[in-house]
Each structure stands twice: as structure tokens, then as C-alpha cells.
Amino acid sequence: MNEFTTTRHNPLIDPTMHVWHGEVAGYLFLGGVVAGIMVLMGAWLLMRSDEDRSEHLSLVPWTAPILLSIGMLLLWLDLENRFNAFRFYFVFRPLSPMSWGSWILLAIYPASLMLAWYTTPDVLRRKALDWIGGRIPTAVGRLQRVDAWILGHRTSIAWVNVLAGAALGVYTGLLLGTMASRPLWNSAVLGPLFLTSGLSTGAAYMLLYRLEDVERVLLTRVDMGLIVIELALVAIWLIGMATGGELTHEAMTLLVSGPYSPAFWSLVVGFGLVVPLLGDWIEQAQGHVPGRLAAFMVLVGGFALRWIIVYAGQHTGFSEGMAALF
View 1 (cartoon, rainbow, N blue to C red):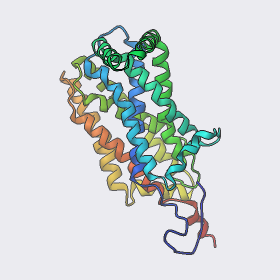
View 2 (view 1 turned 90 degrees about the vertical axis):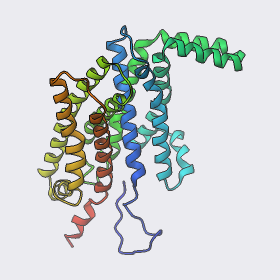
View 3 (view 1 turned 30 degrees about the vertical axis):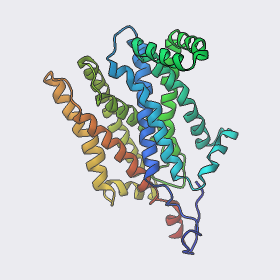
View 4 (view 1 turned 120 degrees about the vertical axis):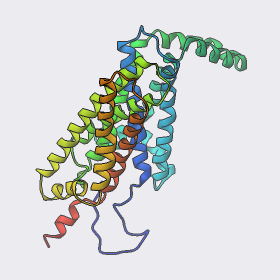
């Protein structure tokens, strides 16, 4: 991100840094959920490949490309020159996070679709092949070969989804973390934080479906561990800013005691992390099957985290500190 300093005030003419809106936060949130679905379902195939899955859990991966498409639509709507977005795919710049992100997003589609096809129950998969074959008879042979190839490469498909999902989750944080002009964003912790939050929201999203009791208990335990890690990463992120320079300390106060602190402490830390963790722990301790309320709260907290970081980060910059020197 380039930093501009100007004394003019001409709307729609002078550059401004407050250019990212709610669409970006929505894209980061949906990207994290998709990353969580891919990583968790890929890991499920690697560790529990021989176990039966409920129909709802088997069909959840089909929602990953749909959610990603909605997120990319939001990102596209936020662009100033929307119809120039295709130029990202004419070149690859190794030092550009956005270039990496554009190609990662493109790779997510085939990986997630192969995962979704593999996890689809046999009955539904055969019905889909018969339906397509009845309308496009010439495609039957090719579809059967693709079907056989996917079913024969379970491990490869699982690993591709785990790695691609992790790359997507980390990228959503690095997209902000590499912008040195924003002290609130410029932290190496944002990558792991957004990845962990994405895995947590992915698990919470899956818990909204009608899963078997065993599946719900396992996903809830995974989510509890992820919430603990996320709380630790949030603490490390805030401590890092508090012990940094004056500008990073000022950026931290926006969240801790500034205008964004009520939403941060209530929606993100309280409603989105601590309360769901305690609720899941009580349910587990009493032997109850976890419900959907805690999962819903985790999703709200995950979205609030990205919304607050996107907006609060645009209220921090180095120009204010430099201006005080003159």
C-alpha cells in the first residue's frame, strides 16, 4: 500500500487511504470459512477415511466453492476498476501478496470440487452421472474416467485440500500483515491468527448442519482447541503492538481502550471466543451433545474480528506520526 500526504480536500480527486469497506471484511471472513472446510475435511479423509460419514457432512464440501464465489464477488464489487481484475492472471509476482492470493484463489476451485465429489455419497454420485449422461451422452466416458481417477487418489486430494486451504487461510492475514503503512496490520501474527480463526469458523460452519453425534463431539473438541490457540494469538498480537513503538502502541489502543474497544471486547473476545469456549466445555463436561448456538457465536465473532481489523487498521498510519515532527 502506498502512503499519500496531501493538504487538498477535493472529493473523488485526491487519494484516500480509507478505501476498504465491508465487502473486504466479508471476503476475508468467507475465505477463512472455506479454508477451514478444506483443511478439516482433508484432514478427516486422511485420519478417518474408513469411517462412515453422515450425508450432511459428506455434502458440506460442495458449499466451499459457493462461499468462495460469494466472497470473490464481494471483493470484485469493492474494486474501483472492476473489469481490470483479469490482469492478475496475466502475470505472477513472487513478492506481491495479492498476486499470490489471486493464483491461490484460482487453485481452490479444482481442489475443493474434487474433494466435494469424493465425499459425495455413492448413490448421489451415480445419480449425478446418470443425469448428466442422459443429457450429454458423449460425456459419459470422460465423466466415468474422472470419477474413477478421483476415487483412486483419496490421499492426494486430501493433502492438496489441506495445503491449499492452509495457504488460503494464511493469505487472508498476510494480505493485511504485509502492509507496512498500517501499524495495526503490520504484524507477522495476522497470518497465523487468520488461519486459526478460519479453521475455527470452518468447524463452526460445519456444526450448523445435521451431523451425527460423534461428528458433532469431535468437531466441537477441535473447535475448542482452535479457540484456545486463537485467544493466545490475539494476546501475542496485542502484546507485540503494546511493546512496539509509539505508533503501534497507539494502534493497539484503538482496540483495547479506543473507539473500537467495545465491539472488540464484546463481539470478538467475549461473544465470539470466551463464551462459546465455556459453553462447549460445560456441555462436554456434562456429557451433552453440543448444539448450534456456540457455533453461531463463533461465526459472528470471526466476522467481527475481520470487520474491526479492516476498519480500525485504516485509521492508523505513519503519516500522523511523521506530521508531528514538523
